[in-house]
Length: 177
Image (cartoon, rainbow, N blue to C red; front, side, top):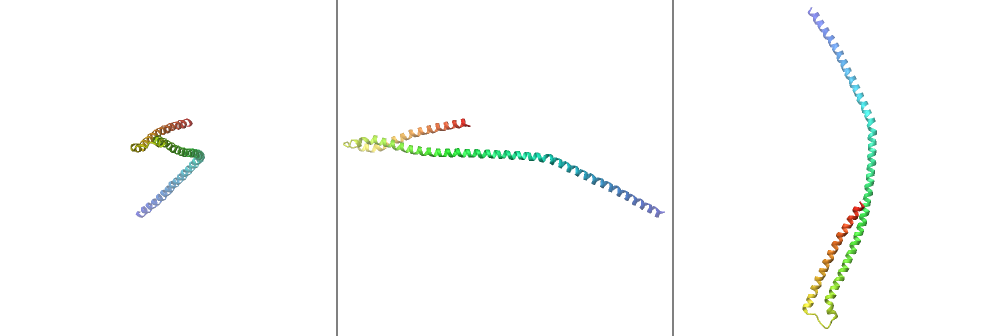
């Protein structure tokens, strides 16, 4: 009877194991189907999003490229205008500087000559009277003082004129912009 009980017990165990194995297989199959269904739905959602998003991204990219091209073109145009104006200003400034320099030198030489003629002229036109030592010594000093005084007057005038010119240019540029 013990043998029969062991045999029945073993048969029950085998039956339970077979039943449990079938049940586990069924659960695993359901999990696999659920996984496949989830993957398919995610793939469909990704495809749908790609279908909706890709044209929008392409459109936005096209607009961005057009805008960048326009801005680059405008930047290049403004840069060329600026370079042309700078060239014009550079040339004008260089020429004006040369003219100012030459005019300044000519004016300085003329005024120095006038001062020397004024101070020494009496002695040159009246050869009968020779200058005293004091007169001979004071003539260069007096000439130098007058030249420096005239120079300072001219510099003050030029600085005022330069500042006035800057104001006029600034006003003109404000009106243009």
